[in-house]
Length: 280
Image 1: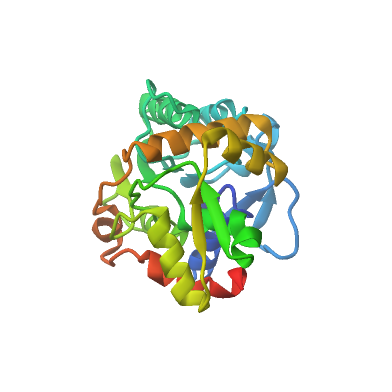
Image 2: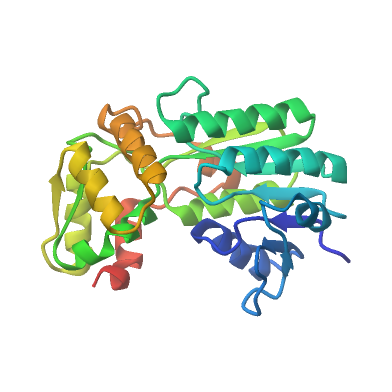
């Protein structure tokens, strides 16, 4: 049987985890990649900047997981994908959105996710919107300073109900393969709202050495993320995100993961233990 599911963003953290889950479950799928490689045998060619290639990738597809790299083009790329999916006869889109997506938000990422959600609603396709909070795995971007015993952010003592990307992928897999998730929005959080200081404590336990969190001004955080390779646009967006977190606007604990999967979300302690080798 030809695959009826298309996964975009299959080479990223969430997409690759989703690919692994579907593969383990024996679910046939295609993984759209700009440059297919032998590591993902399910791969087919498709480039978000090439509508013709996307149309080809969408042929015969009934359900699609929509995820693009963070870029200034992401909103337009995703809207074009939705339009092409509609023309190709796709029935359902599972979109990776973001916690608190709102077209009036001061955070650019939240505005663009809201615009794409609106486009999907207007298309008449059924949908599942996954709105995760801060990714626990985002700390992997700070693994080098953590190896040296510290990490930093412009967030103060604000609590955040951060979520493990493995749980996000679990919800995506369920929404793609099981009925009952049509036209639903799942807010995805961890089981607790904790501060970055508490994250440092959990990392210290998992690594058996002291890890310190240092609160820094937004300008200092921006300089630091630029130095590790973030483009200017994304760095500015990240600072907007953290201003949102610093106001403790992302501390609510939601039931989206257990509602969708029947399983409780992973805790930050679970993440710290499982990913300890990456920070050692």
